[in-house]
Amino acid sequence: MSSMQRPINSGFTAASTTSDVIAGISLVGKVAIVTGGYSRLGLDTARTLAPAGC
Image 1: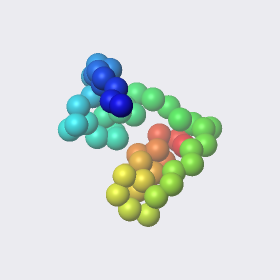
Image 2: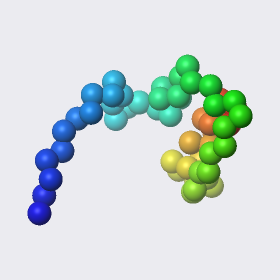
Image 3: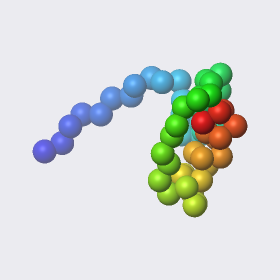
Image 4: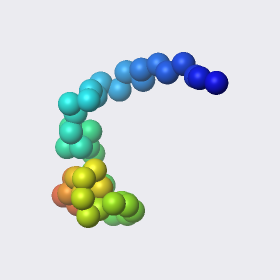
């Protein structure tokens, strides 16, 4: 069984970075749990969330 996939038109592309996605968003006082924070996507995510206040 297959399902049709449709773009969600988020304005982001495959070239978008985590910094692009979080630009203008304040996470002061928020808590995030990031798995895989030692390398790759998890590390990049943690490096982006911390300066945003998370």
